[in-house]
Image (cartoon, rainbow, N blue to C red; front, side, top):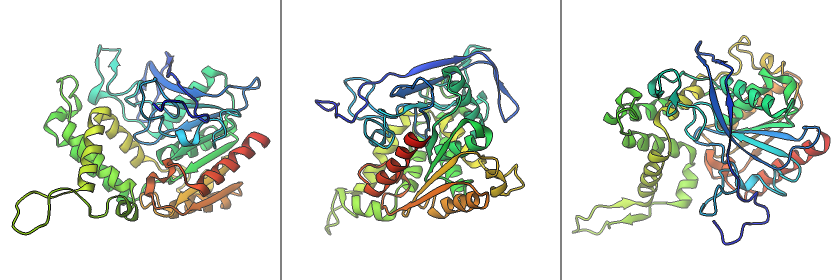
Length: 383
């Protein structure tokens, strides 16, 4: 952690756990008889409980949105640049909650948790989840906290899918929906990338059909490769070129030498894969990528996105990034077009950026920060 906590940081924060004994019926037809949701919160809930914001995390995210969990932390939460006093999600104005999704591996009940029915690790037997299951579990969390309506539900990527699902499943329970770098459904190419990543995990001999924890092992190599595949798709060609180019980590191209050559980008990807392989659960990765694949906002509305959004009651902010080819601006424009056809109030911004899909996480992008902050200021002023 820095020697002194920045003035615009939320400081040191602790995760909280909410336990649920009421069974949660899932879209797959199964039910979780009991479960835990771990979450972090920032700011103060006002007396009318009208200033609450729900932030939904993306694929590899978790509840640690901002600040530090201990004095030993070297890095803050994953969206620290946008959460805190004076930031876009201003903790002087809002009470912000970020839960770890059900099925996650950061404290919420998931495949690495104990199944209370048999005392064994859930592993491969953990139920398949859909985005709507996360939304229903988050609604129950809001009930427990006495929050009848969110000032806004905010999410990037997979989090944006959750935010849109909130607008349809609980239209009276949010006033604003903020959708960043997301889509109403994945393209075939996106599904293909996810399946390739899953195949890398499942082909690891240590995967053990998903029951690796029972076998006291980890499919670290497969999960590392999956992360490398995913990471490549989150970056842009221009961004990788600016950061790494064809610079060498080791070796030389000089004639007459057999010393192996390693590019900087190779070293970087191996490092990211190795770090992720011991920090994230493989079954959770498979579960969440499948939820991404299955998501289709308009499927049950005659495949008509405008008809789907006709059920929403909130206002929308939609943001995309020019270099994001995983969730391209075209996907966001489809959301905006459907919202306009449904006669909904929507603000759209396409941000010039070379950071690819990761742009929604990156700090120091003036136009992105200004648009996000200005919109949220209006949310705080006008409701």
